[in-house]
Amino acid sequence: MGKSPAPLAKRQGTKVILPLYIYPISDRTWEPLHKLISAHPSLHFLIVVNPDSGPGDTFLPSHDYMRELPKLNAHVNVTTVGYVLIEYCLGIEGIFLDETPNLYSSERAEYLQAVKQHIKATSGIFGDRLVIYNPGTPPDTGLIPPLPAGPDVVITCEEPYDRYGGDKVQQRLKEYPCDWARAGHMISALPNREIATIARQLCQRGAYLFVTDMVENFYESFARSWTEFVAAEET
Image (cartoon, rainbow, N blue to C red):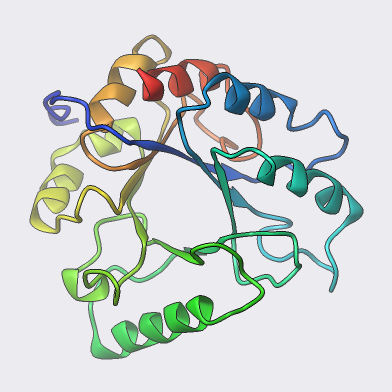
């Protein structure tokens, strides 16, 4: 493993990006999330709603999502986006596009632009109709042109902490920078005792952050480190 990124001053206005892949079996399933959202009113949460790794397996949403999603949207510091394009009239405000390409070609750039334009023009999506790309690694700059042509958010790193701190990942992050206001990092398998410190360091890397000490299934449950991470984001 290479050196970890040197700590820099914390940026202001960082946000929590949370892939919420936890099915709301009851009205208490998302209670830990509601408590933290209410406890940190000055921190904004961008929540990726993912029924069944996409729009779900039925034409209409389940009654569980119809019951619970409006409760999330009732928080003024929450924006919900769908994992893929879903016009369920649930009040989502954008689309999270997973596994977008990171190597440029004119065909890929044209395809992404067409997808973005379709989302922005879809009346069934509310608010700013956020478009989020998740290539998982820094994409070639030709795939993420500046706004308004490019995406609103780019997940430039989705890695375990050991790999994130390695020379290969850090070198690519340097070679293919994304402007701070659009960049997002989703880092797993952090040492539990270092959650707060690392989260604060990552705040200068991107405006949208998710970190966890969990090694697997970290989008399907609330980690023990969840409370500590959110508190570190706000301080």
